Length: 87
Image 1 (spheres, rainbow, N blue to C red):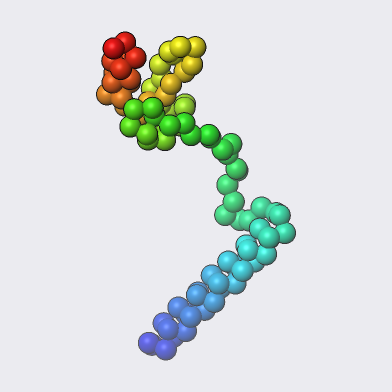
Image 2 (cartoon, rainbow, N blue to C red):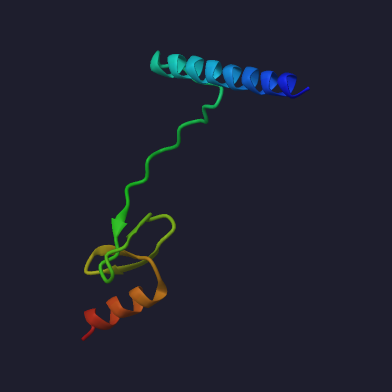
């Protein structure tokens, strides 16, 4: 019984390795693999001017100042920036 179980496990591992190799060959040829997901657009990150954290502009808090838009990771950084700008 144990031999059958181990043989089944070995066959599953061999099948998985085979499909990973096939996926790699397809990906190398420039095609879509069976695990591929549609590629999303890369988002350029911007740096928070107060703490230096990099944030995605779409998810960040923002503030327009001196004709520029500044992006912040938190409300605390935005308030600190406003305080420094008006000091």
